[in-house]
Image: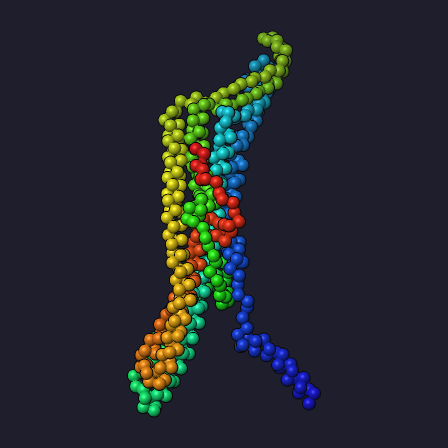
Length: 445
């Protein structure tokens, strides 16, 4: 008997994990902030952008470096009839060593470094802009999953209620107080709801796969049910948000860097009108010559020289200046276009957020409670034959539509808030803690 009890205990212990899984033990819900951090840390596109920024940062460090000096060794004025005689036969024969260094005109190296640094900065801000876009996409997908989860829950609830309605209709029909058409109508609505369930579950799997793609994790990773939330308070004017966007948005800083890069390139083109220099030093080792023809003590000699190019190719340098001016003008116009786009997008997003907030409040405090009361009254009236079944069904479907609209209004509001964050470059929840930015300054050019 003792052995049987021991065996039974071992079987129960081995089945415990399976029983826990069968009971639907769920992992705790993910935290949105941690998911955004995971996406920023793991996303391959961001890693590629970061590597590109580091590459151009390294190029900036190279831009101001001098060219390597050139070392020279030569045997000078060897006698052709005695090619292996390196001295002692002719006073002009010498062994020469030398060194030379290329030096650009004063100021060119600093401007080249400035150009390279502005270009590296533009890639840095491009990386930060990409992080904002990725965070927006993660948040939008997160709240889309929330809306689908709530839609699935409402569909399940509606199916249970429709089943109860069918039971009531069948009971009334069995005693001759209802029509068989009521049963068919309830069954048809139930079939529609089952079809909606199938569609919603497919949408859930697609959104889950999209979120896992953004997080660069296996597409089969489950996403737990997203908890409910309250709409955050928000009270900032569009002008305040514009000021923050012009000061904080990485894309603004990226274009400003490109404007400054074009301005520096134009100054470099003007500097190209001045020559570059090459400094050289040579030392000649000579040997004494004492023969019938010549007597030479063989003193060593040295040569110091400077060479420089003649900047006579004016057309090429004018083209360089025109190229730089066009680059600056292009970046400036893109910057102006972005300012206009930000202003319009902020105003439009705020208007939509205000509408969604009021709509959600209306659903919560007015429409849904009234629809619930209407449904309750219809149920009571139907049981005593004061309203027909279609009125009862219409009351239920109206309440379902309002509940669905409420959860979608909440999700859309939060998605608009995520878009606003990407527009500004700062989480709107953190704006209150930031000092008011100074008036927007034009980039140096």
